[in-house]
Length: 536
Image (cartoon, rainbow, N blue to C red; front, side, top):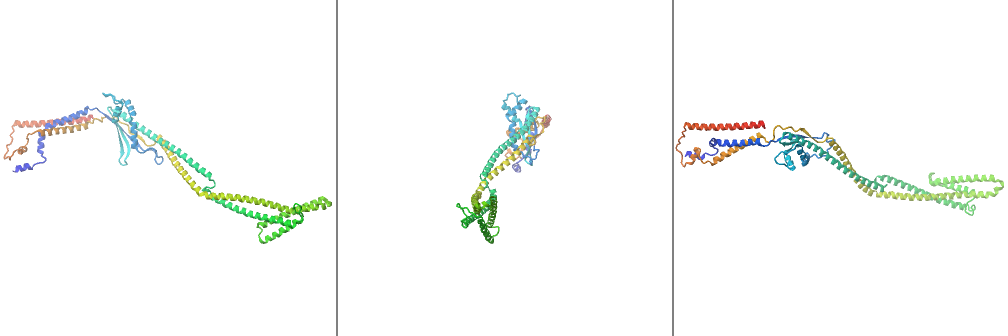
């Protein structure tokens, strides 16, 4: 019963059983494992050799600081690289390289140009190099695989040169296209600005004198015109009063001297002038008692008195001259004519003054009419000024916006021209080969050391599969535990196995053979790995 409980309770990992299986199936595991390794290792020496050569291209920042000149090319390097890659790896460019080095032309089957391009595209590898801290592309690795190391090196250098040249061409074209676009937009903005300026100029010309900036001058001119109108009206009133005065004087003169008039109404006699002077002086004395000397009527009377006295002196001098020249006999005959001339002079003077006064009144009235028209015109300008100011404000707003757009485009165009000049001088962002593609000394494919390890893993897996399969198909019992499990009753005693000397020697020989074969296999694997390392 204890043995049965022990057998039933025993389970899990049985190390002794696996050791027995390893001892029993040693050669059955070793031979497939060695053959699997040998097959893969041999294949590594049969596969065609390919050499890989590559170069690192750095992306250098512009030498000119961006604060001075802003690049006008897209900063998305990855997108630009994708575009450059499509240009470089185009069918035309790859066929030029293929024809230059006679690539893919030594096989058994003749390849078409499209097949050659597809094969070369597979042999080209482009890998981006990024800065892990700033997450920025610092460069990219270009490599090419070929059966000959010299071809791999030359093609890799040619591809690097194509990338560098294509990057410069693409950046220059993008920069030039940006400059041309800005120039076209600037020309359109210049035309629109000229239209806005012409509209503003035409509006200002059409509303000259009524513009908002002329309000102060219009008010000043209007005030001056109103003052001038008031002065003219005052002068007109004074002139009309003077006219009434002259008319009254003429009537009074005719009333006082009815006999001294001729048939045509002309006054005669030197005494009339003296009487007129007395009348004027009495009126002057009356006005002076009530007004100052600056009063218009007082000044007018003074001027009239002075003119009358001057006329009297002139007539008196003429009378004396005629009397002395004509003699005593003719004096009695001509005295009446001289007296008539002397008497008519004051009335003629008054009529002349009245006529001048009427002309002055007409001029004053005409001036007042003109001033009123001007005042109405300036008042109309001032009344129209709010509407004109609003219209001009709209026009100026459009002009200012057009001017702002034009200045912005002008600045951008100038900056773009400088950026284009910088690209032409290769002062912008550029690609630089860190090191030319080296001549590969060892093949990139096949990796014999790697295949050696793969072969070893494949051999071990194959050997394990053989052992597991044989154990699954083997129905024999190889241990005491298996025999005990098959018996329906417990075992009371055991008879130990008695081996002869020949059996023991045979067992030892088989063990030595297994270990010798194992050592030979391990030696061959190590030797093959060392050979692959030295020749790979």
